Length: 438
Image (tube, rainbow, N blue to C red; front, side, top):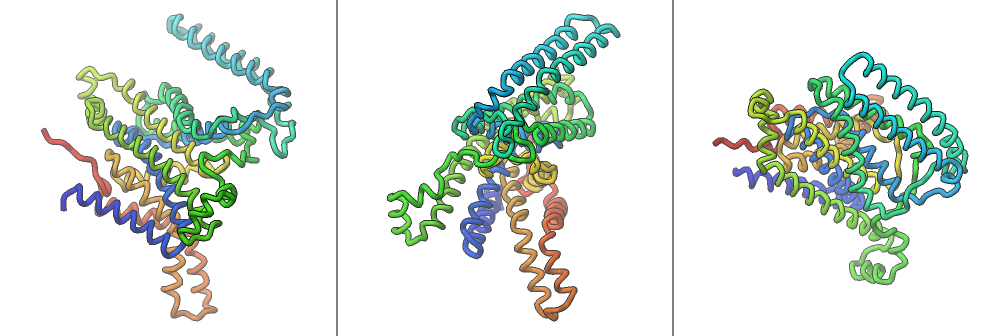
């Protein structure tokens, strides 16, 4: 079987599984899985750019996804005038103090020769800037958080269409990645992983605790949609007429229609990023990145700036993850800082890349679909399996009750089994990287 035919077959099987869920469970659930699979595929592409192209081990995926979620909130939510009046000026002044402190430290670093005096001066600038910043920002943020904390207590956003937040989320994540990369990309692979994980945890901690910015654990709900609301569709004559022609219940069909709209938007973004990723991978730049990945010593001897190229690809991958993070928050309709857990945005995404095929964009997309599908369906499949296996037992059997209750916790075991099977029978992934021999 040719590789092209095999790839078509694998994607066809994945499509068939989604259709089976629609037929035997519900189309609402099937389309929900499809939307999450599309977002997961985009996030998997971002990690594949970093690991598959350049061998960069980024364990801070959730931090960059959180930056995308923050962008979705800041772009789409309406500003809170009372909060701005209470402490907006203080926050803006604090931002300028922060920028001035960073610029002063950078100026001292570049203009002074390396010496203990330079180190002490930079430390002094940082400490003095920090205390001045806190003296200005703390009273402002306290005043902001006191403004109707039950429903607001934060500054809000710009009140723009939320779809604009997707590229902005990429820019936010890219900016953070540039800063992180400047600090960490000179480290060894294991230290890079530790550093990215720590920095991502710092990002999430800030989102959880800075109520004036994100409402913290109180969440920001009711984000505007880029698609119609179900209630508006149910009151539209054209939609009611369409539902009648299809013989569908308007209430159920409105939910399906909204999910189809989301799927269309997500699919367009996925196809654009996939196209650009493929063009980059097949370009001289892509061949150079793989050469650096495979043998840094030889690439360095050929005059390639390894650290600059690593920074470049690290930022590009993070931009894609940030876009996916903004899309996920858009789909959820709320910013929930406590939901950015390592299991959801790091472990699963890495399993997607490994199972799909590291270094192959199509493999990353397939891995995103496969892993998220089984992450969602592991519980109902496990419940059906346990119910079938224990059907011959007494209905009052404690063992039968225990096995059926355990079915709800089969997700992690399912991910482990899928990963083990993939590593055993297809160690380079379902769609492995193509290696050219010249």
